[in-house]
Length: 148
Image (tube, rainbow, N blue to C red; front, top):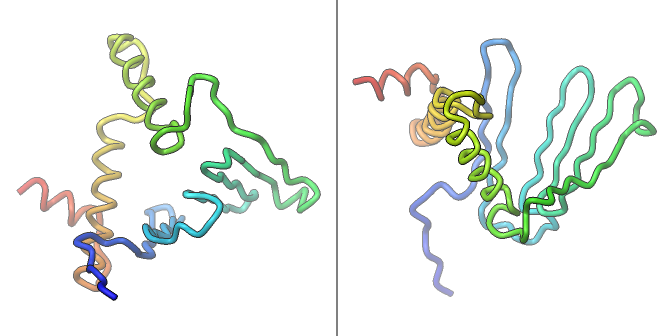
């Protein structure tokens, strides 16, 4: 049996700590295709929990106050998506939103701006550096490296 070692990080647990005390966690595994969904996203806070499942297109949310009996499940569909395609149609929607922002000529604020993009890339770079160096890496460390 021949096993090839990937040249990218194809699995990781990444914890992101924010200045306000909240945390985010990414569980990345690019070779575990034996599950129903390609992506499972959940957000947990003091109010409750929200989950999204792709490609099932299911969104589930509830509050601590209402408990299990108050959990709601919605089918998230967008009629603009003609077929699922890459990333279950989200790439297509991102392109439509980008085109709409360009056509608005500054009159409409894009959902994500340049600063959001920079920070998201910096978080990814910090995660990779943290894995490589085996230590905590700050966003400022990454930004300082970019500005050199």
